[in-house]
Amino acid sequence: MTAAAKPNARPNNPNFSSGPCSKRPGWSVEALTDAMVGRSHRAKPAKARIQEVSDRSREILGLPEGYHIGIVPASDTGAMEMAMWSMLGERGVDMLAWESFGDGWVTDVVKQLKLQDVRTLKADYGQLPDLGQVDFNRDVIFTWNGTTSGVRVPNGDWIADDRTGLTFCDATSAVFAMDMPWEKLDVVTYSWQKVLGGEAQHGVLILSPRAVERIESYTPAWPMPKLFRMAKGGKFNASIFSGATINTVSMLCVEDALDALKWVESIGGQAGVQQRSEANLAALAKWVEQTDWVEFLAEDEATRSCTSICFKIVADWFTALSEDDQAAAAKKMVSLLDGEGAAFDIGAYRDAPPGLRIWGGATVETSDTEALCPWLDWAHAQVSAEYGA
Ligand SMILES: Cc1ncc(COP(=O)(O)O)c(C=O)c1O
Image 1 (cartoon, protein in one colour):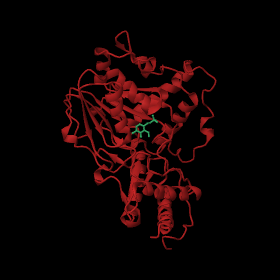
Image 2 (image 1 turned 90 degrees about the vertical axis):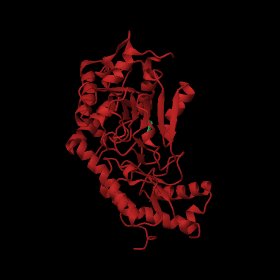
Image 3 (image 1 turned 60 degrees about the vertical axis):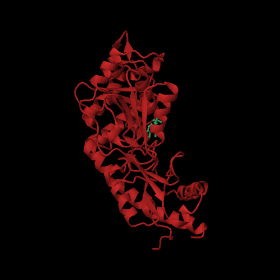
Image 4 (image 1 turned 45 degrees about the vertical axis):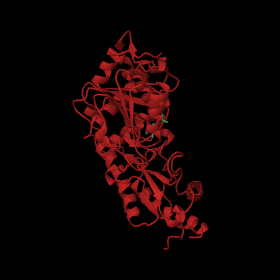
């Protein structure tokens, strides 16, 4: 088969979006049959269902004793903003940003909260900032996996055990796919819509005992919307983290999250999901090795994401184009694959350099990732021919 011939077999499931991500293999709406719909989320059995999501998550993730885990409004963004608005301002902040979402948190802290003592350590798409520059006597905000560049921190070794500041980690595309050194993380956020293949609009917030201490010992200068309030009369409101959510949750989404967690348990828990994700990365790495028109956007292999796997197109015909034309050419590849039903939603994020982004989280079957590779070659051959290559 030449690269230009259309492959025979399509991936069984063409959903390679980086969020909302593919549902688990075998998922159907039947999974929601027992959802507590039409009941108050404050009713005893509904509350128990909400609590079960937290309990199963805590168990799978191996959270340390004393850590709180709870469901909060507005997805990962809600969880991060709730944490930042509740705890920042007590001391200086070091912000790390190397792609769009990290940049967004910088905007929150500098332009909205208007904190004065902020250091921003930035890097370009494909790279990490110098982690050695971080001062852990300050609060530190970073993204574990930069979903729009496919660059993750390689581990938590750079985070000080004896820190006096708090670490805030947006880990929405990392939790359930990567090793998280919980003892080094004081605030962790994610949403079900990523690695679990769950639904959006519910966030998960994990707090260390030191984060709780901050909430109890410090009151920010700014007003606190009800949606962000974690303290009541100067005390940490632990009930939010034991089934009594701040406002109404969707019991359908809760049921769906439970279904996803049970699936994770059935494939070996945290080790199982990590293996599946790493296998997707390995399948794509093998293809990149054999392919001359594409490279990982992440420059250092140790920082390559196993979930949001991002690629740049390095063929001469492509690099000779202006940035706008590159974006248009990459879009053509993406829409060809979409039209063929071979891959949906694999274009680079709107703020990222033109290229491709393929989700490799656990809900994606490695056989589908493998089946996608010849289609990528096919789409490249079609579009490069259009450009006279
Ligand atoms: C790193 C990161 N942070 C935040 C978000 C926003 O998540 P949500 O839309 O669930 O609030 C995303 C979504 O892709 C993300 O990848």
